[in-house]
Length: 317
Ligand SMILES: C[S@@+](CC[C@H](N)C(=O)[O-])C[C@H]1O[C@@H](n2cnc3c(N)ncnc32)[C@H](O)[C@@H]1O
Image (tube, rainbow, N blue to C red; front, side, top):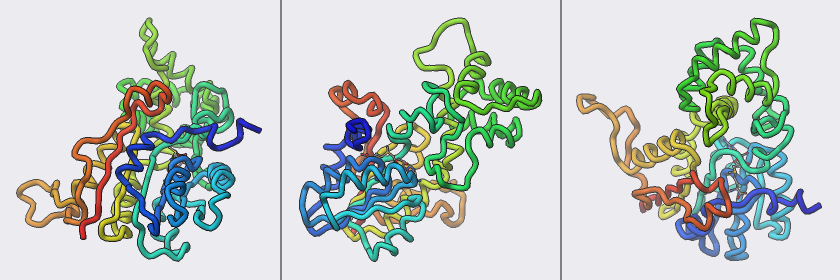
């Protein structure tokens, strides 16, 4: 069925720019830490029959579809259902000591965001789940809203969604559960947020956009793992190896930017600190002083690309 084919579900973002920056060569090992529907990996494998690719994703359905899409590359490609925070373990399992190119295209794929049942979007009424790894024994968004304190819910919505009405929204969520009607679906949450922050006129974006982003980040622990993942990736890059990271909002972009800066030798410690505690060291050179963004043609064809930022670095010899 056409709709189920990976290439019809998700368009890879900043594809030409990523290929140019990673510059994969025959004989090299490429690791796609966020395989998704395999769009970037497919383009890289197509460069040469002598490139080996390892794909990692925490979403088993994405792995299944990417494996179908990339099956014709035979043993050039191997996929692993894992979190990229385990990149070192995955590579050990794959029998690979060092990689030449690593890509992370962070966030959700269209497979997840456009799903009518997985609870990532207020466009469909569904159980409020939001786990990228639907097999994991971790809490869903509904479970978080049922168990966390009002303060903690407000903190998540404020910090991860940058939502100024976070406290008002948290109050309404807790009021509902105190009445014995905890928020369980995307539709209920979207309506609650709309009512909580209604200002008499429609905004350009749906009022629940920031709250949904915040909950998704919390459910999947998206921000806390980025710095160590970038560090681990740099550790397993060969000298001269390249890493590319694509982000979709300022919170993750800031972490990637600062981690790359630390790994290029910039220290973030206060001037009076006797020793460096921010783990600055000189291991990479940054290839993108400013992040690469999508051109008009791409953003016209793919709205997801509008907020994409690509940062790349090279491990020094
Ligand atoms: C934007 S999509 C990648 C799309 C892919 N580049 C393509 O062209 O099809 C992001 C993917 O990364 C996965 N992902 C996000 N965070 C992850 C993590 N910590 N570990 C493993 N996979 C993750 C998501 O499940 C999703 O499939």
